[in-house]
Image (cartoon, rainbow, N blue to C red; front, side, top):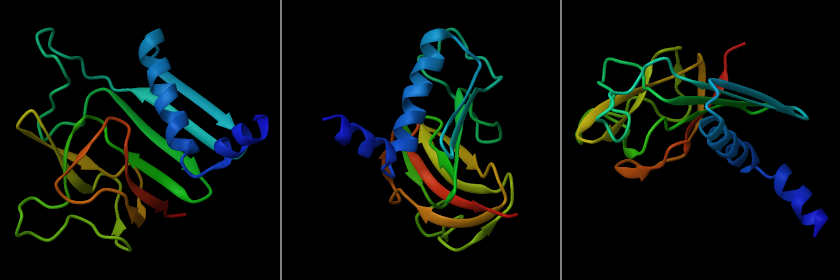
Length: 158
């Protein structure tokens, strides 16, 4: 049984699961930042500086603001994973007839819009945290996403 546990830590989903667990710990302990290194894998979680209105049940962010809450970057040998900062519906383009913001193989700049997540009837633009090439798009257009769910894998420009 111990062997099975070690194999699951080395699997491809391990960075995402580790980030989710650390995110829960971050919230539970009221921390503003966690930085953990396991072997060659480094996970850094940092709580955003925007405060929520007391009446809001969930973070609500206008499309021109950076998302509130916890943002995560998972760095490994294969790139940087951009994760959903909120629960909502993932859209690759600004409208059903528009071209996607980015596709696999595209070069992106830091701060470039990658997608939109609709949450509570607000359209939240999700920006790239790094410059580089989009290696993978993990979510299909118009599908629901959960907090911390991987959206994109970006190979950083060196």
